[in-house]
Image 1 (spheres, rainbow, N blue to C red):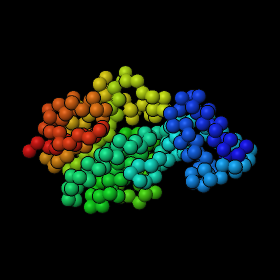
Image 2 (spheres, rainbow, N blue to C red; image 1 turned 90 degrees about the vertical axis):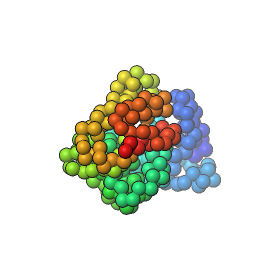
Image 3 (cartoon, rainbow, N blue to C red; image 1 turned 120 degrees about the horizontal axis):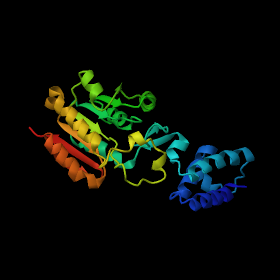
Image 4 (spheres, rainbow, N blue to C red; image 1 turned 120 degrees about the vertical axis):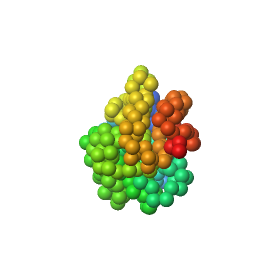
Length: 274
């Protein structure tokens, strides 16, 4: 069997299982296994594949046919132009989250102290440290396995991030860190919301946020109120949630002394009301 034949068969197998990106996924896995880029592969469709290679590819295709995210199969994913390690203990980085970095950079705060709450794979905190070299960056995560992945990513990408294990803002408060900016991509999917099959492979603790999906945001704002130091120093809070949740999240923020500054796709920027 050559590349062209395998490509056709594997695409059909994934399409039959209703994988929406069948052709792209097969090409990516071929690139990984053969250590060749896409242009080379498409120019050498007659390349024969030996049995060990076909067996390895088939194992990967079988996992993707079960709607396991490609990022978990590969063990890494791209975020903001950099490659991050991911495991089943972390969410796969999403393109919509990159907007949070764009909006953070647009704030143009000098020497910000930034805390990423619920860091997961560390993609937000690490990207922040690398994109804003004048910043001081901290990150919290309640899941020890996810935190280990984040630390590996920081070491791999040589990013200066201080990590803490614990719930939401509590480790930052305990360490007496006084951030000027909070990043919060907290679990926001409502408990009864229907997710796709790929998301079903991701850790539920990182996805679901209560009946309306906003329970953890309510808890975060309450923690901010409970700390005079945080409430005084904090200037901006950037959040991610589903667009239909934005109006309610803006109400919660206003109740705790924040006004919406910017809204773009899944991201909201809240500014402390002076």
